Length: 312
Image 1 (tube, rainbow, N blue to C red):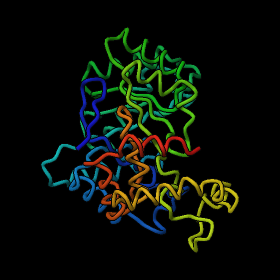
Image 2 (image 1 turned 180 degrees about the vertical axis):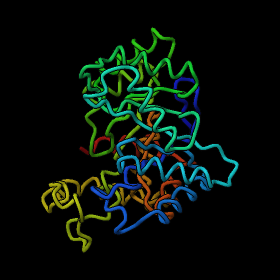
Image 3 (image 1 turned 90 degrees about the vertical axis):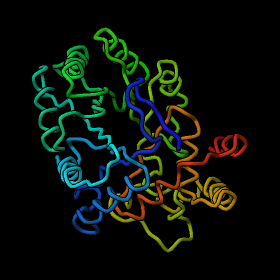
């Protein structure tokens, strides 16, 4: 099974589960189409399949995602170690280092753990706190043992480099930068984020790696499946948007037959095959968690990887 190591300290399978949809009724319709039973089954199935890394945030479902994971952890009967990542949201009124400590305390309580494996800054906002004070506060929590590794999210190459240097001054490495990355969202390849991360030894956590289902093959020009919820407002799910990605979907389908994997598994494996990139697709059901786990244990050939990369 492929693995990634964050900052030389935390080794985990090279695939995680993003849990924005766990408890979020605003965007994902939690409580309407699915609920606690379904996401708990996803949690248990993921662990059974060897996927033990779960990424959440204090703002997901206004804390509901963290609470659900805390409940699942408390009732987890497996012996496999589980790694939880969550995020601090730098709100304007969080203007001092104590506010970072308080937010971390609240997340620890909701998750029912004493240490968070990866604690990330959700957005690179400064407001009144400033990056230096923020990174110092995070480093202090690493030294006190409440955080194992530190990450950032949605940081540019320059912002990531600054965070790396500020943490290094405190004797703490920057472990990850969580950004949008998929076969359909490849901005980090041209804006310096991917190259800078490689140079600094920072892992890329790729969120939305299946582009909300676009890369699964579920939504196609002549498909009977129509987008629901917020997807209805996304132009990429319109007929014109779907027509643009036909060449990519055809190649994913071709490779799915070649490797006996689903198009989604091909798309996720393309990210893993790069090394230093860890996709964190969502999973609202046990079956989705099982399908996600099928990404591990094999790898695209260099020829197939390159051919996919050239379709833009």
